[in-house]
Amino acid sequence: MLEMKNKTSLIALFGAMALLASAPAFAQAPAAPEAATATAAAPATDAMAAAPAADAPAAEAEPPQIKNAGKLSVIQMAVGATMVVRIVMFGLIAASILSWAILVTKILEFGGLNRVADGFLESYRGAKSIQDIAKVANSEEFAGNPLADMASAAVQEIELSRQAGLKISGEHRETTLHRAEAAVGAVQSSLGKRLSSGMQFLASVGSSGPFIGLFGTVYGIMNSFIGIANTNTTNLAVVAPGIAEALLATGIGLFTAIPAVIFYNYFQTQISGYGGRTEGFVAELMNSLSRQLDKGA
Image (cartoon, rainbow, N blue to C red; front, side, top):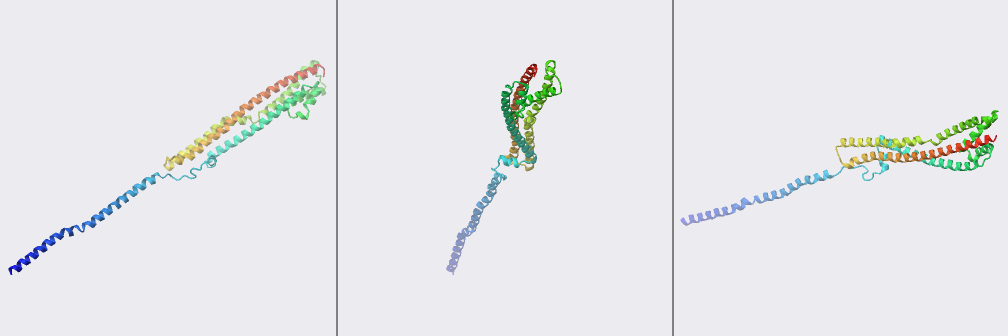
């Protein structure tokens, strides 16, 4: 009986020891999945936290989309400018075209005047009487030339005095020459108006062109700064088109004004030169008429 008790006690003791030996395994078994779950969750959380951080710089670095970016040209700037700047630019372009038209017209005019004047002087200096001078001056070959018109006016005045029964020679020679010189002066006055046509326009364009272009520039830059204030951005790609079109107005103003000033100075020299030529011819004409009157022509 005692042996059975002892055996039972030994079995109970071994059972308790077995339970104690298996307890740590049971205690550690649930912890392993939790650790694995925590370990797996940690990278996922880090990845989720890193994703916005990676996206944020990309969103900030992306520039705003610009219409026609990389395709802007001078013509597009002129056509797409604001209304005031556009009016300034196209007005200056029209003034520039007129300036070049005046240049071509004046060059052809002065070339024709000098060429015909050379031929007229050659024929005039071969005339031997007032009638010969009248014949050369009224020739169709020299029609419209200022020198021929002056000679014709002087001879016509002498002929009118003769037809009126006035004495044109002797003691009345000075009076006759004075009337002839007055007739020549009237032709010279009309010649001055003819040669100076268009010069005032060139002077106005040359003096005011840069300031008109500058007005367009100021207005365009003002609009660009207003756009900066409204969009709350200082990105150069956003404001560059407006500033570029504003500066284009100044460029067109200078392009219009500089040739106008050059043309004005050039034609003033031409007018002065031709004026000196007419003054010399008037003196030559009066001397010739005075000789003919002294001869009793």
